[in-house]
Amino acid sequence: MSIKGKAYFAGIYEHPARKITDKSIAQVHAEVAKGALEDAGLTIRDVDGYYCSADAPGTGGLSMIDYMGLTVKHADSTNTGGSSYLYLVAHAAEAIAAGKCNVALITCAGFGRPGTAPRDMGGGVPESAFESPFGPVTVNMYAMAAMRHMYQFGTTSEQLAWVKVAASHHAQHNPNAFLKKVLTVEDVVNSPMIADPLHRMDCCVVTDSGGAVIVVSPEIAKSLKRPLVKLLGTGESPKDQMGGNVDLTYSGAVRTGAIAYAEAGVKPSDIKYASIYDSFTITVVMTLEDLGFCKKGEGGKFVMDGNLISGVGKLPFNTDGGGMCNNHPGNRGGITKIIEAVRQLRGEAHPKVQVKNCDIALAHGTGGSLGTRHGSATLIMERE
Amino acid sequence: MATPYQERKISAPQLNEGDAPYFEAASQGKLLIKYCNDCKKYHHYPRALCPFCFSDKTEWKEAQGTGTIYTFSVSRKSGPVPYAIGYVTLDEGPSMMTNIVECDLDTIKCGQKVKVTFKPTEGGPSVPMFRPV
View (cartoon, rainbow over the protein chains, first blue to last red):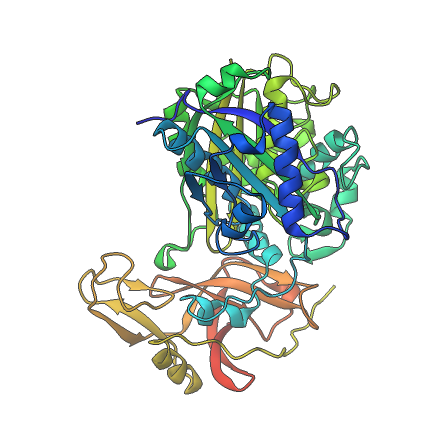
């Protein structure tokens, strides 16, 4: 069974706040749910499937389902870090295609915390004793992938910097963006070194925010007054250390891209807009290679000279400013990747960054750590 | 510019059942590695069941303690002192997460030959780290 054409994006909403001090995380989940339902023209009573990640308050989705007063027939709380929300959309689409539910609500909400503190893996995690003593933190795990990419393919800090520069060109048009200043390659490479070879501005922002997406059956989508955006294909596959055969030059996108393209029946050259998970600049460079937008090892050259800037380059990416500059709610940027791709397909992106004739878009999530284990998921969607 | 190596406080590893032989050996200056008697491959981190063929006929072997730096990063803002985290590919095959120590951290390079050394943890067993040869 394929999900192709069997699930539509009916509603989207991104919380406008980037610093939240007077609301609970549960309230932010509810606010983004309300926003997405209003965008769709649906009510909370229409929801019969609910999806959040395991970081939501409570056990799985139980507390949030209770808090929002939902009665659902299908639910999932997959946790693959920031990529969770792309997994959840895929699972919601599968449930709708199988007739298990008709209106799926996916919410994300979180308060940011600095990513430089060592992660507490907790008892029972099998790799804990073999990793924790060495001080793995989010940034140095991605930095190890960047260091190897530079060694093996000759990628430079200046090339990586173009990812941030392109995102900043988009963020200047987003009034809600955390960083709205247009940056140069020099700004990025002259920012403080955090974990060689990644500088402060190679990193995404840390924000308090959230977002929600409503996925519905074709019949319901066609009864609403919003532009029709349907899912064509999905792919999900984690990648890890492979028993010690460590290879940090590629991500799970090698597999998820191929799976999603095959289901959708499209190829990389058909993609008019791409939301690419941008926890760090290197994440984008590697993912673009793995999704087939350029050859392995040539991602650094591909992103140079504004090639990711809407209206300038060949592959407009993250036109909301992405995790690099706009929003990375609770260190989880997956939901905003989906939201901006739907905006582009609807023609509702900011006019300065709207891609002309945007009929097919891709959204990709990378969650966890490029240096050890990460979740990876790709969605391909089309405007009808 | 130079970033001299400084000793740092290392929290004791949280051991799971089955991890003890590795750390008892490390505290005696020996690096162990898991070997599968069915598929004849080494793996790391060590498991009871081989991650390649799922055989339960795995056993500890003593590694030579020599290898090559696959990749690394010098963390400059993640603790009281800078430290170099990396993966070292052992001469037996598998790559392991570790720290590169006892050198100018700014001179570390991918492809560099290294040898194991053991560093104490706070109230726990020693852990294997590597220094350039």
